[in-house]
Length: 209
View 1 (cartoon, rainbow, N blue to C red):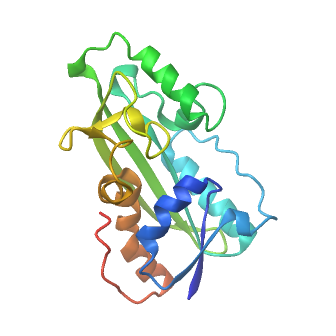
View 2 (view 1 turned 90 degrees about the vertical axis):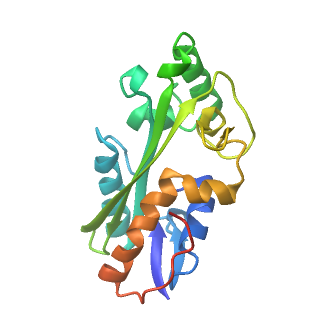
């Protein structure tokens, strides 16, 4: 088994990522398994810049292969907000309730035909030296609701409607979200990169993309 560090301390992200990689011969770890790894300051202007920085710094400090990602919600009607600032949109990192409240307030007068939004995830794979050797991106398109629906997921999931399912990410099961989400698509696209760069044997995808 080849060690792979998931470059996040976000437990909900880890829970979402683990099943996507479970069939690969990887020993999955997280930043929490390496107390010496310092917090990475996400000051990039794009998702790619943040993903690259996290993957590189965590890999260099842990001296392990590292998969990091940066993700967020993009709302064209708000000029791309909250974008790379999705996690701290309301001022406190990871305060989902406050972030959703701010988004609802900003979208209050936006008509239904202009409430399109999409999630973006950029994943970066870095070798133990900290060199980023692969990048992938996944997107998931939907619409913003006028109020929260559902208790599942995290972030903006209760406000993010998947029109084809007539349900929000907060209402869909983890299995369905795993198939549709931006994160699953980015990581699914990374699978051949693991094989190419880490020398893993090819395996059948789990239907995550």
